[in-house]
Amino acid sequence: MNVAVSPAFDVVSVNLLQTLLPLHIVVSDGGFITQAGATLSKISGDGSLVGELFDDVFEVIKPAGLQGRRALLATVGSAVHLRFKKPPYTRLKGVVAVDHREGLTVLTLSFGIGVVDAVQRFGLTSRDFAPNDPTIEMLYVVEAKSAAMNESRKLNDRLQHAKLSAEHDAQTDPLTGLHNRRALIQVLESAISAARKFTLIHMDLDYFKAVNDRLGHAAGDAVLSAAAGVMQSHFRGSDCIARTGGDEFVAVMMDTTDGNAVKKLCERLITAIEVPIEVDSNSAAISGSIGFTCSAQYNVPQIGRMMNDADHALYASKRGGRARVTQFEGLSDGATKMNGGPS
Amino acid sequence: MHGLINRSIQCFIRDAYGVSAWQDVVRHADLPVSEFEAMLHYDDGLTEKILMGCAKVLTRDVEDVLEDLGTHLVSHPTTEPLRRLLRFGGFDFVDFLLSLDELPDRARLAVADLEMPMLSVRDCGAGAYTLQIRGAIPGFGAVFVGILRAMADDYGALAVIERRALDDRFDALDVRLLDAGFADGRSFDLARGA
Image 1 (cartoon, each protein chain N blue to C red):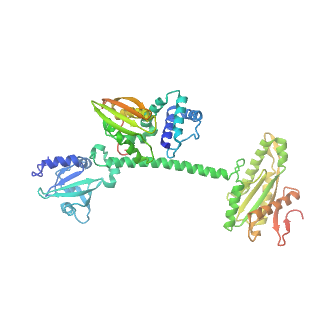
Image 2: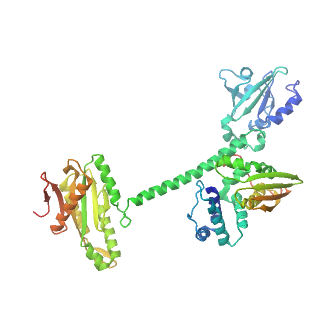
């Protein structure tokens, strides 16, 4: 088939190249393609490339500035990059050798880094590559590594999920879903280290023990959960609400320093908590006593001291007859005065 | 032991016999975990405990379980990635058989720390082949019987495979190829998802 184009063609070489290099072309002195490897013919779209002008089929990308056979001659022994002039404009990379005796230019080509796309686009099989060509092994490694990577990613996802869930559990009171003491301390520490103002509110349920004794622990748990729900509906999403003991709750209101506003909010909270809760067709009526203190009341706010002071204010509310709210007020001489508690 | 092996057994029991069968295995074998991770390592003794548990729950010999595991590794949709990797080994079943001595190196390219038995394959002529398996892990021979049977199906070849256990860690598999083009086999494109 090549005879018409290049009568002087060496038949032994033809067979050698066809066997060894499925991605080669031979270009005649006149710039015609006189021979093409089977795989190259397969990807060229419309059958054999033989008989076409090299310049009609390929664009030389590198080295830049030269085209056609002159470009090929200039790159003998070094890398040449080609692109098909027709869609899908497949890129090839190769090396050029020249047989001056016959006036032939021989190129052997490869898909280079584009091989994965090329294999998919042209439906290539292992038979389209020479057995010594490591392309098939490379495709194997690409696929094996992405399978291994996929497994690793799934493992990482599961570990990440387990970590988040463990962190959540470590900071959550399982009965009410509120924060626990550990989470509360973290919130206070970060607020203090960021010098944010906040109000610390300590609430103790009143008459809870009576409910527990009369209706049992299950009913007591239901009442605690209901009280937690009432608290959540009275504070903002950005506030931290924690259950710190049996019937003790602490709320931290960020960026809030207005004692009167806090007092009003806490009074509404107590009113809401006093609404009797239905538990197994029994009615449980509780109330709450509250003490609070604001970080702005301290030159250097400290968690332990503020918790203690809020606690003092809470007990002032208890002593004052329960169901009331007291703000702690520290005095410079160390004595304490309660605002809203007994005078 | 590489987690891939324990994980494969777990997935096989789960896919072939259901989640509750796997839970039975975990209970019977008194396994320390109920889920194995493919990318972690476990105590060597654990794999044998798992297999004994499987044999007990399924009331079958360990070797039968291993053979079915080998078939599952190639033929089940959840193990399609492995089937594909195996198909890279050869264009047809004979090509694949003759490439099996490369398999440990191929496996290491994919998972560097996976321990594989030594495989050597011999062409005995007239469609007969012998695969010798020497491994640190007993039972690999039985798994390979399942793998080769399923791969013959995959390529559409008709082959008879018999196992001679030479000793605890040394198996010989005799493969007789009756018809290389017996059926169409399953398709394989070099490109994934092509």
